[in-house]
Image (cartoon, rainbow, N blue to C red; front, side):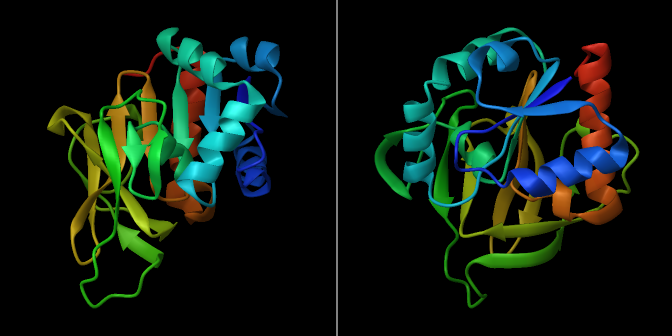
Length: 207
């Protein structure tokens, strides 16, 4: 069973629809006990970093997420949920992230391209990961964002995407993974990624 965390700042319906398509068992919940007993957890997110972290704080779920990450079971952050996994963001001055993956979130620089970055772009996969199992060499995914993650360690960079500048479009540290793009809006590639995550949750193996 996958738990999609409901903390008032996530695009729950599109994730729900995608998990329905692949036949994954899931629950949408803000209940600490239900999240803690799940086989895998998805942390979605849309909007501003500061508002999302405030919503997580208000929900009382931050300790639950940290304990879940420490359990070794699969945890996936999507879009703003990925950004929340890092230490902080330029978008929310003095607002701390979850600190599960060392790094910082920075505004995409102006390189003459439209900001926010909206649309399809390719993933340059930098590190072998089960989350990308069975995908082509440079799969395309759907993005909607103005800020992007910068992991401290190259060991935690799973994929890089170019949009005026290279940014870390997927990161991972052990059982904790983050995707800047929206797999639930990325067609067959996104469905394959979510299926890979569901398989991790079923057998408890991230690698």
